[in-house]
Image 1 (cartoon, rainbow over the protein chains, first blue to last red):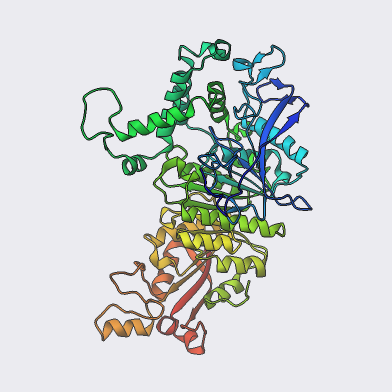
Image 2 (cartoon, rainbow over the protein chains, first blue to last red):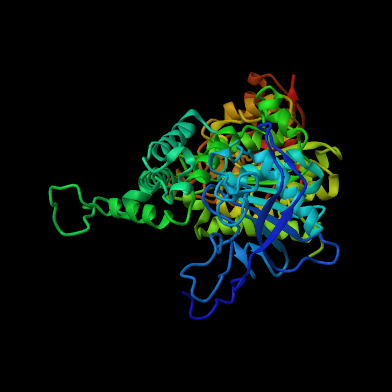
Length: 382
Length: 202
């Protein structure tokens, strides 16, 4: 908990809820009749509404990007390193908006929400959504906030995929897209990891075909395994070696199956802190969102053709030790952009932290984003 | 940005570039040349750079910069993507200058190359009489710590262009203040410190 709020933090923030009554037709063919999106904003929207930046979140994060909900909070929002007064996404200049995506479990309508048709949680009846559906729902939130054009849409990992989709679906509604540690679509290996996570959840005896809410239980065991697996893929071999090596929690080996190595302790801690605050059905849903993401699908698998609709300028960033979405995947994105003669800058950041690097305080990374966002700010005269 | 270019070879390059053209600048540094061309010649295109600080500086300078290792070639770019591909004072630091020159002529209609001329009389004198590897204003590093691993003379470069089937459209040799005095036109390989070439496929 902070004793005092740091000067470069947005401080105490309070989320708001936007309600939407207009049915949302989904890529899957399903429809969501009405829904809520919980969101936070930082900074002030200027007179001509040109300084708005949309931050899109990754798999397990949410609308709480920066600041604290109360002085009792142990940690600030997930991108405190990036968003705040004087930070790369400078809230003294930009009006920053972030929402929990549809299907989430932090206050936006999702599988754990009550289905008005049954009076019970949606559970497995919540329709599969896609990145396109998310972009559509975010566009409606933009309308509600009176934001016609985003100065930038920014995101890391799955968040970066949303920025790409924005540039294709609403080319005139964003000036810049900042795509960090993303990929143009998942590889078989990526999907395989997601499937193991899903199987861990779905084979948990407490899963009850996704209707565990009715049984007052949760598939914690499966969700814990899914989260542990996820964390292995977010770190690099190098980062794990640096962080844990083969260090033992106690001094000696006990020759049993309790926690012995520090890395085991870390994974269990990550798993413990995930359950109870994340909904297993949302986890299943969002891994599917990742698997299905493929903006080139409707363009004969040709990403360059998909990006031909885009009008934004791009910043693409990758990290050397990220093996989940490796630099080569970002370069596919970069190629599809310069093939269309669109503006793009690309930085490959030397970092040992793996995929998680996009959340970290890495000077060159933050400098690159700051320099780019400064350009985006000057462009709209702020 | 200021119209004054610190590196006067840039001024000569800028003179060669037609307004509104597309440019790929290999080893763009802090983006000075690209920014100048964008402003003065309304060019579009990308700078390629590998140095972290230069990438940040290029972004600050308002240009498109792509992090890439030129030693890996330009396979990311399709044939005939650019009107000009520029390689300024970088050729001599490449692992394979021949491959990169071929790549330049694959992705660009015209190539512009500038390099420090190893045939300059000061270099010749230092090696011939001093018996040591030359250290000059345009080649300030000692042999054991120089990034310049493929030095050549004006004659060498012209031979290579011929063997690669490139047709030289324009060439200049300048001294360290980048002036192109009369003597330089008569004896470029002896007096020139920096050589500048514009060429295309024959």
